[in-house]
Image 1 (cartoon, rainbow, N blue to C red):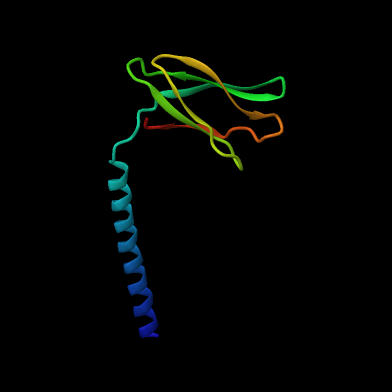
Image 2 (cartoon, rainbow, N blue to C red):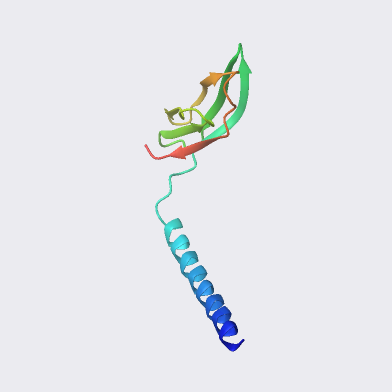
Length: 106
């Protein structure tokens, strides 16, 4: 019984230290350079059996790059000039709807 209790306590202590170590590496990884969140979705819509997303670049001093995430399809990507708004076609109405738009570095 004592041996079992010692094993359980040791396992609990080790899992706690591993949890702290993984939290430290996660916080260190989040300090890396992140791309600015310039591209924002204005709206998703369908017109004449084609799917579009209206994107706007909120950064007025730089070109922004984006990726449209669509499940089970290759992700379309592109660029927006400073302060521009653009309608981007990413598929037909038979394709799945886009999940979100991800900002990426140019």
